Structure formats: structure tokens, C-alpha cells
Length: 483
Ligand code: SF4
Ligand code: FE
Image 1 (tube, rainbow, N blue to C red):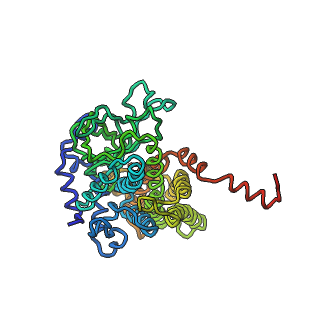
Image 2: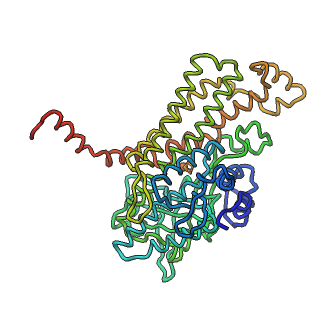
Image 3: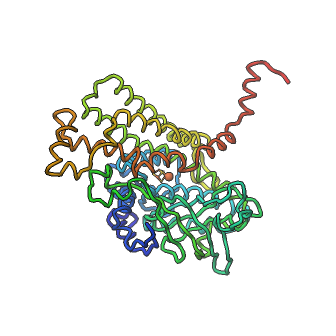
């Protein structure tokens, strides 16, 4: 059976013995923790939607390796149509969760490692591509969720991995054995780690020959000995423990990030996809980043759809839906959001096959896509807050609304249009709060800035891909310049 149900997925994660820490304590059952559970529910949606006939075309496909129907999140893209469907699937999931649903990182790592392991084998006669294909088929057959881990802590940014005073600030091989390697280091900001069965680790920057031990890529299960996670704090995270679903704004879905420590983790030989071939580290980073920058043209657009919808509802509840400036602000939000989507679709439609046979996006357009994502969601949020009004941050709690003495006053004085209950008005404002300032803002705003690489990383790629010489020759031809 190649497709798991949402419930089977939850139970499969429950069955893993992951080492998860939060607020200085070990979390005994992460699956049941009120702060962590919404992030698991987001990933669950990638399984639930795959079971629904109306989403079958977007959520599933046929594996060229097993011939079975598989979840698209475990797929290696076979065409530009696959690349386009990927973006549409991500927009759908953003709409259904209003959060980061995490599973894309593994899909993007699959496609980057698939192409790069092939290139390394071609040059060095290694067997990384075979290793990877075996791993991929296992993931497809079991319908696993895979995290992709790239970001090292990096220490002093002016120093290369091997120059750092502390050699562990980039993940590295500390021991080579006949049956595998032992790795040490950490990966930061890992959203999906907690809810994944396995992780594909990749280097975070291009490497030089002296950084050989740092040029390593592999996959291990998340309950491997020596691997543990420390969950990051988010604004409003403990609000989820207060028992008010309403005050959370989006109580069912979310995402949390983990600092993941690899404290001497063993990796068997057949799980290694890069090991010392330093010149391929940069290629792997570029490809993974390209795929994940494409991804943002889908997921963030879906979350944007929810935010635009919430702003429109808030305007109605406030009785201002017909005001021309409100209509214009909603148009502006839509314009920005659809521009992001256009970039996601464009870099997919302009994709091309790799030597290994899978399809890769147009790297220039994917980087332009993500560069826009570092800006437009901020403007969309600004307009959303403008429309919502200050009450989105000054409203009393649900406890006040339910209180025998205070409730009638909250009802009376916070009412908008007569036909809408005060409770519904507060609910939509809490959702806007959640998306712009609360726990979901991590996934919608700050992740839009830094996820899949901070803005400067895209500008470097845009410079590299822009072919300025060609543009100069165009100008000289038109101006009849002969040098
Ligand atoms: Fe997927 Fe977007 Fe989350 Fe990345 S940020 S894992 S693309 S939902
Ligand atoms: Fe991300």
C-alpha cells in the first residue's frame, strides 16, 4: 500500500522514539503536546488530501520506479507539468492549513540529490545515485515524510567550515568506518524535522578541497541514536496551552522549528549520497535552493489566499466592505499574491530535464520568485492589518467573552454589523493576528524572508544567472556600436 491515511501517518510518527526537548524538558509524547500537535496536523493534511478523489491529480502521481500511485511529495519530477502541479499542490495546502506543511523540503531534497548524485557517480564512479534511488523507492513505498536539512549554524560567517575555531559549526564527518561514517554537527530552523520519518542532510554552502569532511549528504531516521531536537520559541506559543481554541486564531494547524543536534550519529554506507566530493556541494545547494524557492511561489500564495479572505471577511463584519479604499486594498493584496504565484508557475513551465532525467526549474525565475516572497507577504500583511483595525491586537480573551459579568459588555461594545455575532468578529480578527503576528507569522512572514535562503542569497543567484553580457550585446547592436 503506497498511500498512508492521515491517521496512519500520525500513528507512524507516534511509534518513533524521537528525542524532543522544549522549555528545558524532554517531551515524552510530542504527538500529543498542545504546542507541537498543530504542526503535525499540517503535515497530516498532505496525507488526507491525497485520499480525496477531487485532489487526486494534484496530490498523487505514478512512480516511474514502482509503477504504483504515490504521494506527489515523494515524487521525482518527470516533466514541466509535474513542476507546475507541484506549485498548485502547495497553494492548495497553504489554503487548507494557513501554515507551513513542511513536507516540501523532503520533496525538494529528493529532486536535488537525485540529479546531483548522478553527476557525482558519472565523474567518480561512486554509487551514490543507486544508494539514493533505493532510499527513494523505500520512501515512496512506505509513503514517508522526509525532512531536508541544509542550514548549519555557521558560526563566524567570514570563515569557511574548516577555519571555524569550533569545527562542529558545520556538520561534518568525524569518523570513517568500513560500514559507514559518523557525523557531528547541527542543523538550525528545521520546521519539518519533528514530524518526519527520515531526514536528508545536505551541505549548506559551496566547499573547497580543505572542507572535505563537511561535504556530506546522507539520510537517517529521526530516531537515530545521537540525534535530538530542541524546539524553538514562537510568539504566542503557550497560548495554545490555555485551552481557548478561539484565542489561538488557527488552533488546528501550525509549524514549529527545531535546532537539531547530530551528536555522533552513525550513517551506514548505503545511506550516503555525497562524501568528500567537495566540488558538488555547491551544485547540490544551488539545486535544492532553486526547488525550494519555487515552492514558496505555491505555499505562501495559499496562505496569502487565507489572509486576503480573512481581511475581506473582517471588512464585511466591520461594515466597510463597500468602501472604495477597502476594495482597492483587497485588489492590491490579490495583485501581489498572484504575482508570487505567477513566478512559481513561470519557473516551473520553463523547467528542463537534468542529465539524471528528472526536471529542474528555471533557476533565474525561481530566485526571482523567492526574492519577491521576501517582500510581498510583508505588504500583504500590512494591508491586512490596515483593513482589520486595531482590535486584532487589543481584543479581550475568550474567557472574558464567556464570563458571566464581562461577557455581555464584550458582546455589546465589540459588535460590528448587527447581523454578525461578536464572537465571529473576534474569531476572524484572531486569525489575522495569528497570520501577521502570532505563531503562523513565523511561517508566513519571517520564513518568507529567510526560509529557502535570505534575500541576499537570491541576489547572488540572480546576478549569476542574469547573463548581463548578452544584454550588453543587445544594447550595442541596437545602438550600432562597433568595438
Ligand atoms: Fe513547504 Fe512552504 Fe513550508 Fe517550505 S515553507 S516546507 S515550501 S510549506
Ligand atoms: Fe520553508
